[in-house]
Every structure is written in structure tokens, then in C-alpha cells.
Length: 79
Image 1 (cartoon, rainbow, N blue to C red):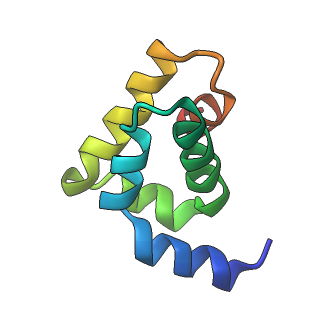
Image 2 (image 1 turned 30 degrees about the vertical axis):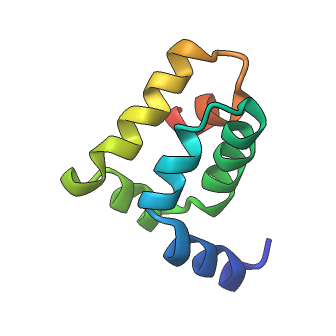
């Protein structure tokens, strides 16, 4: 719940590291990365996520919703 920590994690991981983690072969890595992404999101970051240069990350989240529907975090991010 610490906003400063969330902002720091966002600065260090968005978008490249998050995309790498969400593309990992390890299901636990993908799950934890999804949780971190969801936890860090706020209105401004959702807007940032929707920018054209970040579309790969947004598309990866949507792809995970289709390929791993049991992964609740990506569904929560998408909705």
C-alpha cells in the first residue's frame, strides 16, 4: 500500500522488465509479475500503459487473459 514503493517499482520495471517477466516460461513468475503490475496500477499508470510505445505490454496482458484464464491478476488488469 506504500505509494512511494509502487512508484519506484514502476519506474524500475515499466515496461521492459514487466514484459520480460510476463513472457517467462515459468507460470509462477508470470503470476507474480501480474500481481506486481496490478498492484502498481493507478489511473495515471493505466493511461501510460495505453500509450502506443507500451502496446506490447498491454497486448501481452490481453494474450494472457486468453491463454491463462485462471490467472486472475491479468483479468483484473484487463477489466
